[in-house]
Image (cartoon, rainbow, N blue to C red; front, side):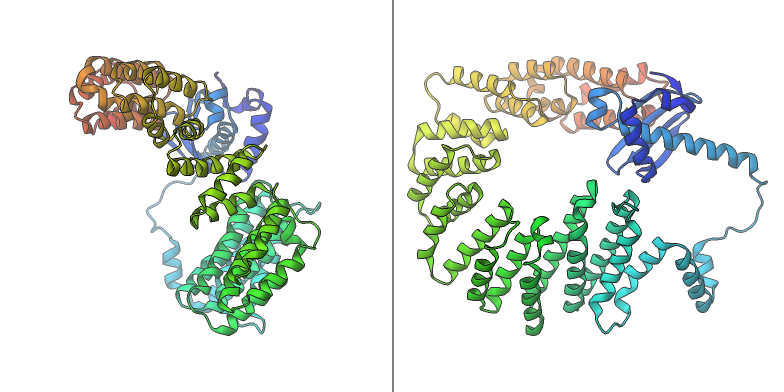
Length: 559
């Protein structure tokens, strides 16, 4: 659709416009640039490339790499980029109207200023600027907190995070989008300082920074919306850094401090409701080995199991650690009652099942696996148990069970190793079975993995005519690139026809630098697989039919 850029609100879906405004306000539209006359491109959320064709103030064409645009022809990324472009054009117009005449004066740069400014003047400027700009002040404190001496060093890191969180909160106590971004950036800066301290063997500094991040980010997780996963990653990174410290022979008193800290913090409600408890258990398990505190860890787990507000995930982690420490203390006879008392806990049974396989107790593992597969259990658990059951069936040469679970796993994962298992168990009517299997795969929801496994089977079975037909029907340039090499020797003319049709169709529906780059990559790929004749014919055809597309001609000029 074509519409005036100034009236975009009247032509964009309200839902996409609302989401686009949020992205625009968050500064998610980056690297906005004019690739060629009237053709603009930008990166949104550092993930998707958006391209817009504006001639000169009218939106003629839009494109985005996201799945939503592919299916609906609109998305929030396009809306955000249009808003950013409109603002850019408006500012540019104003600037040109007010711009003074160019002069030949020397350019003033940041490097030049820093080279000539007096140290005290610079410090005074930083003080004044920090007093006016809270984000700058937070960045300054996060970057240099480690250099400041405190009677309680940990408090300075917590203060930085507390101040960031206060600044991020709105009146209703929720956290603003910009506030979330700032909190993540400050956390990253502190963790960068922790990594630097680890390299320099300042182990206590590492631990104090990581504890501060864990303590301050956890309580606000549920208020962070789309940034919750990012915050959880920073918390996980903090635990990982503490584990690294423990692996580098830190002072015994620091190990004791970590033990006491983890014991105390793991009892707090905020870690239970935010599913951080399993990470504390892993930390406690590691420290308990170093300090020979297995009994103390077991007692802690016993006491903790009586607490309320225990989620399934937290409770499973508790039971797993309890079983591990009992086995370490050579009290394995106490494990079976735990398993019997939690026989509906699929995650726990899967863990126990894998342990049984490691110690070679296949008979018991087989019994447990069959019982679990007969129940209604989550798919993620079922898939893992089927893999265990398949392994047992291979050990027992149980052909029927191998066929059953290899079939299930192939449809779930599209991995060729399961097809190879089925082929090894083939009956006399393998050709019929094979086509029925391909039909079952093609009835599954479409994904690139599903698409490619069918082509892989055709290659494996040397069914070149069927592969050629499949490539023509599927109409995927990516799949064509992956599998055309196998059929080129016998079907060069047909492969060229498919490439020609798909590439010209692609160019009629896509424009700009991204599309041009992709076409160039396909030409290079053809030459790489020694299909020079096909590549040259396509190159000539594209240059003849699309000579007016500057970015495309530019990309192809180096080929």
